[in-house]
Amino acid sequence: MQELEPYYFWRELYTAEEDELSPYYGKEYSEFEYSNTIYNYFIHPQWDEFGSTTLYLKIIYTDYTYNFSIIEFIGEWNDCLYNDIMFLKREIIDHLMENGIDKFILIGENILNFHAGDEDYYEEWLDELDEGWIAAINFTEHVEKEMIDGRLDQYILMGQPLNDLPWRKLKPQGLFELVETLFRKRLAAPQ
Image (cartoon, rainbow, N blue to C red; front, top):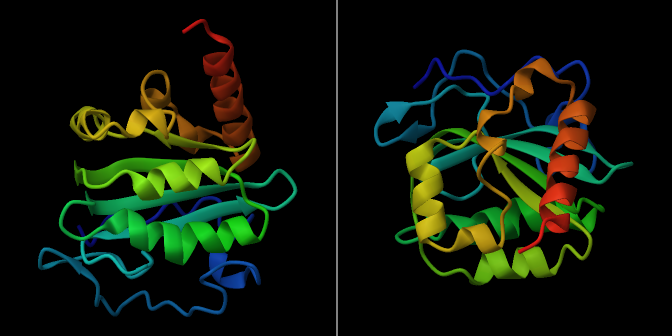
């Protein structure tokens, strides 16, 4: 797990530690000191903690003009035992929303599994977005199924074609435009 780094090819465009509006502004990272773990496995020191013991993240891009943020995750998302969504919502999402962010792209290909708990924080998050949205991209099939079984698909846009997006081949703005187009199409589709 220590080999899995957050996506770094957009670092010339954005770094959360240099963004004065970021919850990680001013944070200094070590490339050599591994201290965070997921179930006794060390993870790369570039991942950020936010209060969960099993889930870490990296804000890999935020745009205050178009009001979106792209967040990559690693670990186990456990709302049942650890209420990870509460920590995510209170420590990261609320901070970003206070600074105008209302569209969230969650990258989940490094999420090992998901355990559902209470839906209240997801409902609150979506209710506070007004015209915004939350999209889950590249989540593995079993994690997406666990999220759907937990009824989170009523709050988060997920499923095909979001699970096969070649997001690394795009610039952040291109990824945002693609996801927003898919979101608009899904809204316009007959129910």
